[in-house]
Length: 51
Image (tube, rainbow, N blue to C red):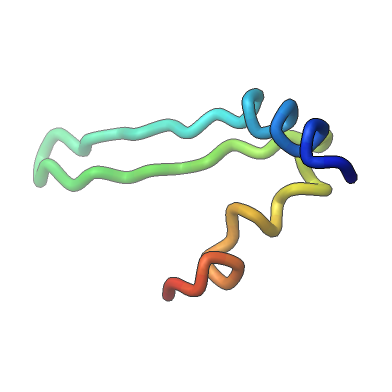
């Protein structure tokens, strides 16, 4: 997959941030649709080296 195609797909990825009202905890979720499955590894903790 070309860099241009990867960049075009990443522009359509949505990340939602929710703050829980009781304890003010912030939760982030990245929404990957079926068309994003080819780039899904880019968003995994293993790919970024964080755990």
